[in-house]
Length: 580
Image (cartoon, rainbow, N blue to C red; front, top):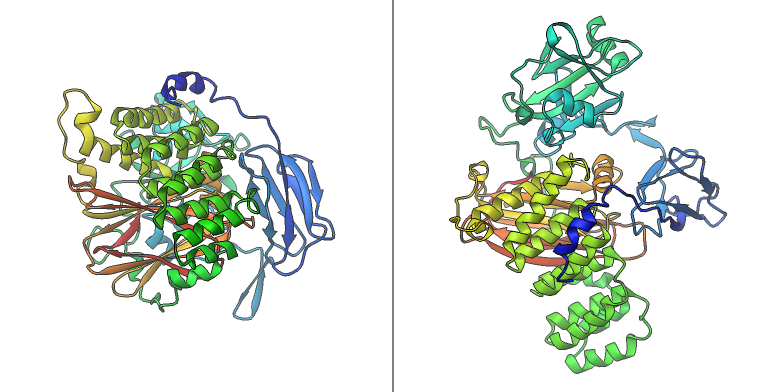
């Protein structure tokens, strides 16, 4: 494994090839209470499919990145992207109706007010500010596509960037050598532009890619209905850094603090960590009720054979012994258990999380190297291994992995990210160079942190989860007892989860600055992972972020109890919460 980096060049040469191995996927489909017979399960874009039987069970073979479409009369259609480890998907289908003031509306988009979208603009890169109001694909009642500014990076100009990123777009040279974009071959008419609210026939030549924050595309039929004949070729909406987009706090330039909305007062309804242990499996309850270490060891001898096929048992017991005074036994359990799951990146990541939390950073690094080899096209693999190298003091290797990731994205070998991980990667690199620059480059001196981040002073929270199917709601309660909820569910945020699976990442960061002093409380409502197995959430807290006194703390949480608001931890640090 120490030869890991030496083999990267060979590995990168084959990134363009996809794995042809098919997964055998099975599960049970219900309406929440009873099994559903006759649910159609097909691979999107093909005629390959099956139906659920009288017990609601099904079995189908599909490749990673195939999309399984589950449909049934009267129920909302659900689409799931197959991952490399997907083997079981238990689906709970929802009625395709919505009740509003005693009126039933069918097949309706999510309802968000313009105020909601304006408030979310700073943290949701699918929202575009237009003269028609704030729009995004999940709320518009017509075909609408969006890109973030990060999606455009690596292209020579805006026209080429849009041609690369949007299917079917053609770029032509028209009169006087100017470029034009054609969204459709049917009309033969070029698209017009709306830049920060101003409608233009041509894109102003002074607009640079680095100035663009959002792009929205509306095709001809919808555009003509709203703008007239001038827009028969469609409209391309562009938001730039020079425009004023999104809600602001009072008279400041600060994005709106969603945790201070007046209609979301926290009701102290989250259960405590102690209460949460009621949801533990029987064996784990017995371990925590053990009178002493000897009694716990006896329990392990009793259960280890019975649970030999349960990887989660060994993770749980390892963590118990590691935190209850028997690290040698914990290490033995860990070494033996990992041998049985070396081809499963989801379980390896769960182990790596726990090892990081227990400061076994070199051992965790070994696992992240294995995960990288198993998942070379996942963005998260680069973030994990680069961060792990930094933990063990291999700063040059860390920087080289970040640089390699950016190179592969620019060259199109890896898919660029539009919603989640790109800003996290950028922040990680900036922080690495700011605090460890002298160790990354020979003869360099430690630099001050980038001016891009000097406005932020406080605590950074990085949330990562091992299972891409995990759905949950994070709740941030500020010192004034108002809360902000970030929803990671297919029902509320399907575009985000789709993006995660396509690009291969499972993380989100939040920043807590010094504007609101007091104690913050962070809660979670876990919704499940389509399997009867736990998920694991890693929370990395960076105190005094970006300062030479920066400190890092890693905690891991076992998620199994569903549909209950649970307290994760308190954060005694002032701040306004924002996702960036």
